Length: 518
Image (cartoon, rainbow, N blue to C red; front, side, top):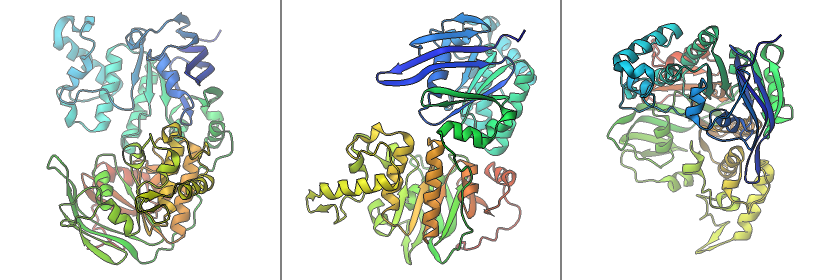
């Protein structure tokens, strides 16, 4: 007789108005296993896990925990049943200590009957048993993200969680930190804990899980033993068609520099220097990737080069024109006029106006182009014609230029931004997080468009926290840490070496940067 599953979901349905987010879903998770859940954006993964953790209530269907049917009214009830969740964006108080964060919300537990000293003893036991060592008196704001994530896991274990849900746990981690996380998950599994791992990174699924379930359009389409499947099969199950998982590109044939950056420094609104004496170049016909954990100056670098943010010092040479960024008053419109396109990291905050229609967003920033406007009057017919052409060329779905942009999926919103920038034929394209929140089918499409632009002789500066993406697309890789470029590598860079640079282990060898501005 088989062992009772840790978690079993039967016939789970959940709708939000006309959207049927979960459709008659069945799921069985074995005790003491690591079970992956994958799917495109909007497949229903987060909704399903939110039902299991008590954030949402299913319209119908049953939840069984250790073979017993339960009703999970809220997250407190889920925790009481031994279910913990580590969210993608950590739920920690920055100016509290590790110990204070661990006990926060559990003040009425028996563990605190003896005060913080008893809680400290229990925390130390958990740290040692599960190899989750972290200073209990350290402030959260002083810890790197890898240790902050350990605190989140310790919070769940302190509350006696037997089932841990991890939502995109490696999104903010360096490769060494991600490797260590998976070692921790193995320890948890050996101790009998059950892990539900939600990730879009198929390599992690193959490396870390025992079994994997695939969701598509709100339905559970397959469950596989991980050893009996492949990334290719999982990708096809997710999308419903064959997907090319590698970037198909020829070696770059770079020409002269189209953008050169020299001694760039940027200070943020707090007066903290976030970009520190950065110099590099981008040549026509190449993709230069900037790798690094989020928050190491990459965002400020892109915003400064695109004209959104002011520099404190530094020079920019673009298409033969030298600009002193420390004294310049050029803005984003001026940079676009110099043939620089910009796909911002946050499409919602900087790339789109969600209440505008697709056709209005398709010319945002280029609305004064004579093709679309004459004085105070806009040529609406020309704008719509442009939008229809871009929708067809970039496979934007649904193909309706009148639809509000908020109604498009994340992948299609990103295509709207990319189409707008690429179709202006810029000599230099700045791209921030091109596939953030984008499903695997759209990723394939976006990558191919960037390679086509490179092959057309354009220079591309690519910023991504996805190291696999950087390694797949970039012809040269710069690594940023603490506002500095700490190393440069070629297209075939070793992942472990890049990971060390991303963690701040600087290049000991004197850098010889081909094309670098000195």
